[in-house]
Amino acid sequence: MAALATSWLLSSAPGRAQVTSEPSAVVFPDPAKFARGLYTEGEVGAVAFFGHAGDVVSPGFAVGARLGYDLTRWAALQLHVLGSTHQITGDNALNGQLLQTYQAAVEGKLTYRFGQTSIFAEGGPGIERLSTNALYVLGVEPQYRVGVVLGGGAGFDYHSLSRHFSIGVRGDFKVMQQLTSSQELFASTYLRYTF
Amino acid sequence: MRAGQALQAMIVLAPVVCAACDMNTPLYFPSPEPALEVSGMPDAKGNPSRGENGLSLQFRNPTAEEQKLLDQQAASLGFDVPWIQRDNVHIELIYTVTNNDDPMNPSTDGVPQFAIGIDGANEYTKYDENIVSMALQQGNNDPPTVIPLIPVTPQVIQPGQTITGTVREDDFAEAELDLYAIGEWMAPYAAVLINNSQVNPVGLEMVPPNAVIPALIEIDVNFTANRDMTVKYDVRVRDDHNQLLHLTTDTLFSPTPALFQPPAPAP
Image (cartoon, rainbow over all chains, first blue to last red; front, side, top):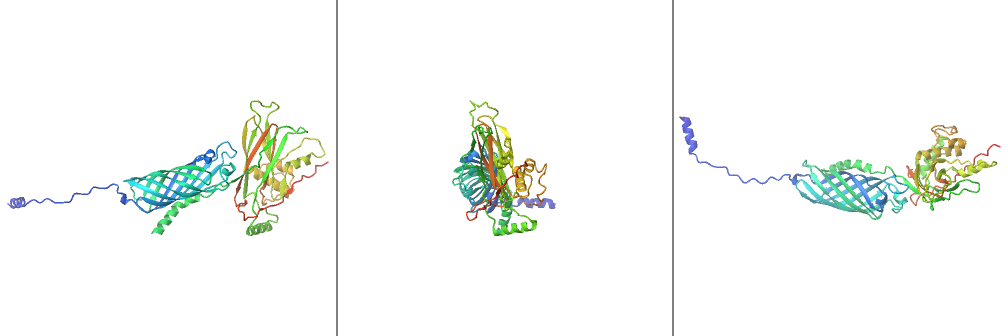
């Protein structure tokens, strides 16, 4: 009897639907959650020379690093150091001798992000030092082993979604105007950590 | 917090920066111009044609502090300590020999070959194989005996061909020990030069085991060939302690090594 009364009472109560706002679209991945600010990059790749130096210097293995700071979501400033090792080639007595290059540059970087990936362009001036005077002996460069390099490049970055890490590839083209009147092409893959 | 992050960043970058430090920093010194060329025509006595040139490596004088250390070391050892030492200056020579004969019209007079002999000087003694050869030849009509500090094995080279070779750092290290022994410790020069000290150290008995061996500061190349040939070379120097003359403010180290004169042959 009581059950019948209860069901009658409930069935006679007016029904009210819960009113909620329409859920917003989920943004995934959300670049706003990616770490931003101070960052470092470690990279490995290859450097190849063109012009005068390209005639006597083989492409070589390169390792480098960057320390930068994201000024905005799309602009950053970074310091770049790079070392590469090469072999002297060509029809000369120094064929087979080793040569290292050390470079340091200040670069600006512009980034366009679309979700998990981004593309960027970067460039700036720097200095380069050769480990030996082999290019001078071969008549390729003046006696000085330090010169200015200028150039830039572009790359592609893929975020790992772990907030701090991303990986990417890049290519840079630089002119070594004072050192050897030559150019160099640098291609690398890198790992980035943003603090 | 930012300072801590920057420190972390520097820790990450430190190995890369260290890796970028100079690990292999030789300097190369080209042979004098014009290149050393011999005609291949034997001289009046029928000896093969020879040519010689060389170069001196320019070092700076020691600083007052470095000179003080040298003096202290010399006082403790009881004999002179050279400023340019074998352990600090490593020399290598890379040569290229070209047979200038026309490959289409080669000479048929014997097998074309060349030989290279390397002499030089440390800050005490200069060795010249030509002087030694003349001394050995005095009083007889024998063909000249040439004993260089560093002999390079004679090689056959075809017309138009170019051969490149290297006289390695350990070859120079052996020669530097030999020159020091014959110049400063009265070692019998022929025995010392002919024998490899690591195989047969004959003649080196007088050299103290704690002797500081001087490095060569002058390299002379003697080139012998029986055809028209040209040799070019580059001297490669690894200078561990930055003793080569770089800055204009440094003064040139200019010792006057004594020319080695072999003892007169027994009558």
